Image (cartoon, rainbow, N blue to C red; front, side, top):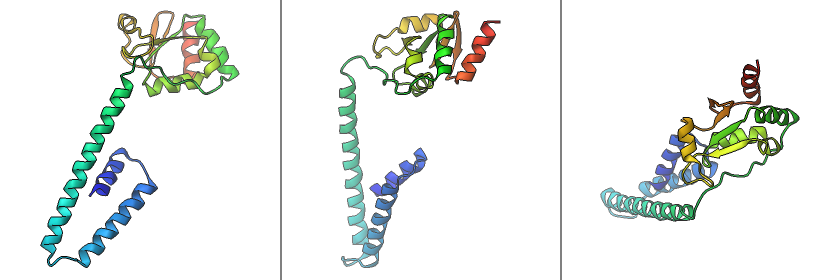
Length: 185
């Protein structure tokens, strides 16, 4: 039953896990072989014992999930949170773009947990991104500037600000260059 729950979760998440599928297959094979050759007097006794085992498994899984969730929440409550470090190096094109953006008082509004913000930073690379201002908008983030984000009208992350105008959404280098081209006309 637990394997069936995990398989349902995999289908819901649209993920593939060879180990999970193998485990579910083995569990199903064990169930089928136990069902075909019952050790108990009747199938109804087998069904009662199987159902009881399934319920115990579900209750145990639920309890373990809740305990782990509480542990994760407690570990996150240790103070402000920082976004992950940028790992990509900047291309010459990204460095040039960052210099152009800095000349237009570029700021990127984001949140430490935002995957699109992380992608945006990686697109530019570490050397280019240090030339730009990053504004943390989540109240739990390190150096949070949530009031500024509200005052500037930021509604989603990442949002770029160039010459006071907002440009929401994750952007490619080409898209950022096009925005700058329009501003510089």
